[in-house]
Length: 67
Image 1 (tube, one colour):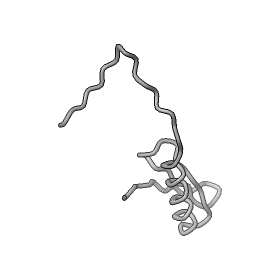
Image 2: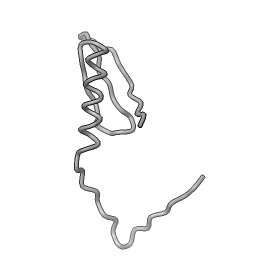
Image 3: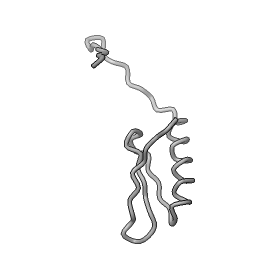
């Protein structure tokens, strides 16, 4: 699996990164090597998290579209 992360330089030094495909998945580090390691851990934890999924109301409809 390949997941893209956006890496930013922190104003106070070091780096921070976010994973747009995984809302709330962010991490920080002093070096890029440490950031890669932290990103891997953050992504694994995000994917392993048991986030409750709301069920749709009986009046809601779900449409699946192929474009």
